[in-house]
Image (cartoon, helix red, strand yellow):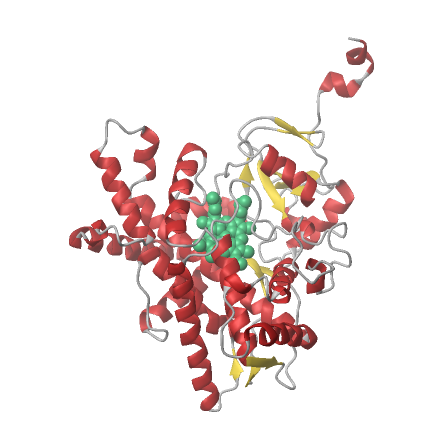
Length: 491
Ligand code: HEM
């Protein structure tokens, strides 16, 4: 009682996290965000207000969480409470609720199922013969096509385009159980819809908080075009599903692709209706499957190709790092045996370099918004139920406590005194953390390692003389490097 009488904080309970100045009606703090570098504004606020603060995007309060300690407390220790997703208007109204914005028991069930299938398909278990073979085959095709270009006198390469075919085909094989010839029209069309969708999603991002802007002339920030695009993509996926149902080929249990496995699961759930819980009948529908198929392509391809773009930009900016990676590969593997994922202990410098690229490029600086289910206290502040939560990965991956001189590109920071990759990579969280962590993390890590390793083993990459390159980071849905080409020399 004495404490209650004398201590205002005990009397009033925990307070909401502090906010920066400049909140105005309708827009909240949105007008204060740097348009191309919102992460810089968020970083400045987190330095000023601490690791937990709140801002208003339109009329929505968003609680921003920064740095390792707070992210762990929220997303590991209070994982269940912080695992919701808010109702993201653009995503829901254009693409529908697939997996990414689902939450609660439906999300838990679908995630478990998808990860199991992906493990069987090899994605999440780290290493699996099936996926390794697929990646290896695609890398071989990529290298041959670069050799062919070089033989024809084409020595300047767009690395994102080049890696798109590998990443795209591995994902197509995992999701649909087939691959495309690298230069096929269908593949090119898919590349075009992905690029267009990325651009439209970026253009319409403010609509998440200000949905009425969709009526703004001339094009409603691209909203209506995106709705049309989403409908077309959905029809494409639905047609694929219908074809499979017509031919019944998905019933073959040897087909381990995600779509076939999901259709078999739908059959199971339908046959066992009555006995099965409500959750399962909500998870396993063809509508949901079509959305999940789209989400997988969208979440997987752009993020990885973007990372390849950054990796080679850093490598031509830091030829010494490129040389060191190559030398270690040559010393350990020779010039012909391509580095595989299981070789990473022998060539730790390559793995450290990939970590450093992901840390510096920081392509998903705010991850995907989360939501709390119930009131809680975090770092002494009240976080109410249904709060929108922003994971500030930007400041976390640049935290000088874990990454001294964070602006420097220095793969050595991840190596111990014996030259091995450090065991605990605290605060390196490019894929997020907790129960909604990226589902493609293992696949992405394997591909980044194997593809960059194969390219460095066979070629040297340079700046094209006279061309200006820039490491400037701008937000284009993810943080994307300005488009560039580099010069390639076969070794
Ligand atoms: C360099 C590559 C990648 C990066 C940096 C990346 C990063 C992320 C991040 C930060 C999240 C949000 C996590 C959260 O909200 O807590 C996420 C979610 C997700 N990612 Fe990735 N990702 C990459 C590649 C992939 C790939 C290859 C796939 C597909 C196989 C994929 C599928 C997903 C899915 C499905 C989610 C949503 C998970 C959920 O809501 O439960 N990602 N990713």
